[in-house]
Image (cartoon, rainbow, N blue to C red; front, side, top):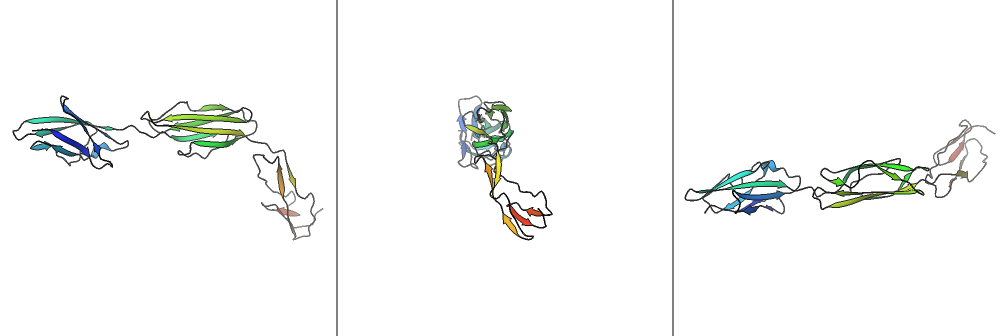
Length: 239
């Protein structure tokens, strides 16, 4: 007897088992290992019915190319098996980059939907640039132009993994910024003695304006100063 009855790589969890084709000429063993596997130092566990096998079971081999194993029977006759190791296709369907212009997004490969991505008031088009993980394909070419209509626009790209099975859609929902029409203070005038303070409150109009940030500044810092919180301090005599 001189047959290989089992061929596997036990280093994987679960272990990877080879498919033995006794009818092929020469006989073959096909093994598929997970994506990303370094096939240059794989150690097979081999079961056989012969008196010996070469290379031996448990010895590291470089499976970049096919490796021939020879089983020798007790009577000296031999049988050869050609072992071919294939690396599985990448099953990850993800982007490696995603950016918009104008506007910004905080890209993360594991975030698939980006809502309320603000673009400046008056924006007519947005350019979206993107790239997929190695081996994956996309249903759009980068860059892609999105048209902003009635203040909104949507971008979607479907990524298909190298395995051709796994798919993932990334979506960006754009909204045009609501412009600021005015800023009002809760007090029009304030009278302070030197050293006194007064806190002012600012209201941005309209209430749904995209930019609600107020920057405080004094036009006469020798008379009064104002900090980032709207606290006015009298430092000199003024009118």
